[in-house]
Image (tube, rainbow, N blue to C red; front, side, top):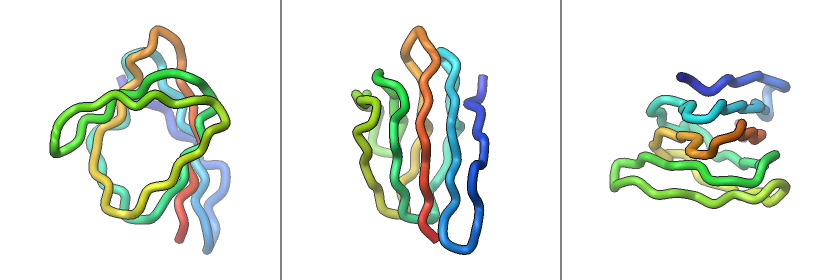
Length: 91
C-alpha cells in the first residue's frame, strides 16, 4: 500500500506536500533531489529503509527536521494508526 501525497503548494521557490500514511503504507524507494524540511503532524514511528540498512525514526508532532538533497530511502508507517507529515522542498 502506498502513502498518499497531496501537493499544497508548488511554485518557483517551494514544493509543499502533505503525506498521509495508512498503517503499513510506504513511499516507495526514492531519492530527494532538493533540500527539504519535514513537519510531523502526528507523533509516532516511521521506518526508514536506507542503502546502509533499516532504522526507526521517532517523530513528534510539531518538531521539524531538515535534510540535504541526496537522501535515498523508503519511508514506512509501522504504527497501527495513520501517520501524517508536511514535506517542504526548497527549489
